[in-house]
Amino acid sequence: MDSGWQTGRFVHLFFLDGVGLGNAAPDSNPYLSANLAGLTRRLDADWFLNGREPIITPQLSLVPTDANLGMPGRPQSATGQATILTGRNVPAAIGTHYGPKPNAAVRAEIDKGTIFSAVTAAGGRAALITPYPQGYFDGLTSGKRLLSAVPYAATQAGLDLLTAADLQAGRAVSPGFTGQAWRDHLGYDDIPLLSLAEAGQQIAAIARQHQFSFFEHWPSDRAGHRGSLAAAAQHLETVVAVIDSLLDNWDYENGLLIITSDHGNIE
Image (cartoon, rainbow, N blue to C red; front, side, top):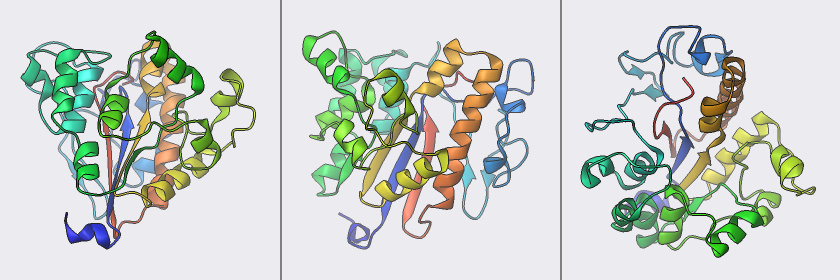
């Protein structure tokens, strides 16, 4: 393993489900009505529009990427996430986009190796820092729930999925950032509540404790599927507030932060 692993260098992947770059139509693109100052001041006023050239700054780079990966059809979660995790073009490998949960062909591609398994095999510390409630594990045990690509990759690398206990102890961050949904919908009255700024700060702190960590924010895809334009804009404001705090608290000398998505939707 590179000697940098002994000198405090680390990588964090902040994953947003279903978040792409959109067009300039205010009646369909929630970016245009959202207050995204936390990223606009770091990039430029039109950073969220598709069809543009990469933006390169001393600290940040925004590189538009094509989730189609050279394959026809609509990009899907399982193959998109598997591509991110493996570094290989999974839609091309299996001949199609597939999702939302991985089928046998996608799982076989993940089984060939991911960034999780590469880090752990090299003796590094890796973690999926998104926690899961007990009902999630009960669903897996009963067969009523299937692992999506990200937790499947983590468990195939020998990692334990984090739980409510990890969330309570500050070793994880809720996919909704604040922990409020765990209290309101999951019955965990003792979950600490975080502000959006505190969530970004906590992700940065947890990232420093691992050679590689992965945070999965899936509510963004749900906002794209189910919400109104105004609700989608509000959701983007929430996400950008967390990212703004994460960037404020990031260790730029030692850490590499990657923010990416599997496909578009909310835009």
